[in-house]
Structures are given as structure tokens and as C-alpha cells.
Amino acid sequence: LMENIINQYRNKSDEDSFEKIIEKDLFPIEKYISMIKDKMYEKKELYFEDLVFYNGTKSELITIFISILELVKNNIIKIFQDKDKNIKLNLVGGEVE
Image (cartoon, rainbow, N blue to C red; front, side, top):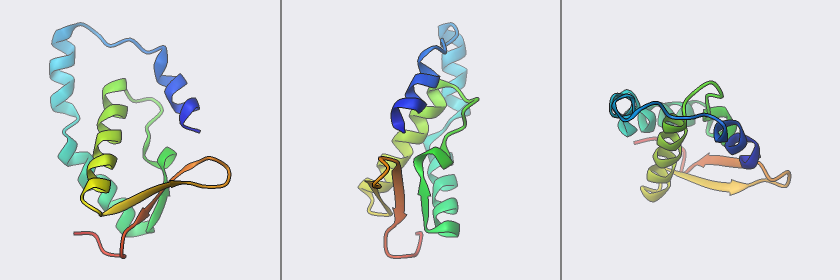
């Protein structure tokens, strides 16, 4: 569940501001959009948990989340919650642009 994912990141602290500036460059949204599109094209559907790296940083989690929202906005994927309340992503149509 999303709550479990958030709880794992809740206790992590970001380093000083210089580290945050460098970190932003390490997690470009375009890179994650491309990665998610590739995975979606391969599998057609994924769970949100499949895209999260549990040893990653808060910034990385946020970047992944923003990337997913961008793909939804561009009508490439759809998001819904299954009967077990897991967040599921489906490829719209069947082709990735």
C-alpha cells in the first residue's frame, strides 16, 4: 500500500542543501518517464511498488511519482486501485509513444 511506501521514506532525512542540488540532477524526470514507459511497454501493467526503489531517497520517490503523473496527464498510462487497494498502472491503448 502507498502508506507503507511513504512510511519507509518518512524517517529518511535529506542531507544539506548542496547535496539536494546535486541530487536533483541525479533524478531527472525525463529519465524516469522513459524508464516507466519502457517497463509499461514490456508488461502493459505494473503496480506502483514495481517502480519504487526501497533503498532510494525521498527525492527519487517524488521524481517517480511526478513522472507517473506526467504520463497520466499525457494519456500514456492510467492509474487505479485494485480490490486489495494496491495502486496499479495500465498502459493506455497498448503502444508507448
